[in-house]
Length: 196
Image: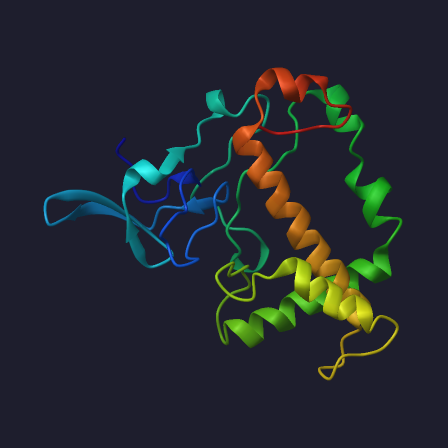
């Protein structure tokens, strides 16, 4: 399989990667070349064998809208495939604005502030993006902050806001891992929208 810069790929094999990759996670190819005559792709500044990855294409992802690999979100964050279904009825069953944003506006503002300051902590001066190579212990960090819920952390953010950020990070990673492994038959039988 040959890849090119900007391709969105899913990691199929994260063995012997020193925690640089997560199986099932989605990455953007930074460059594709050959090293010592062997094909290689650069992901997160390191070269890997292309066999470790699967190119994400609309036909391979069921009814999930195709991403634009070079698109950038607010603050320069890279966009990535989501589980937003293209089927109208399925979209109606996932009301993001009225079912989440309208319920928890203050809590989501607190989580966004944690995200912004976390980026400054881990990537000073860089545009807002989730550097998954840093502080990836979602379950343990979530529980550490949960044990101190109701209080502010030393940086001024609520521990509960950090619990919510870690819970969202954990859920996002679970969904991304599931996207790679669920078959269309399994997805069709689930009561809530799923990407591939």
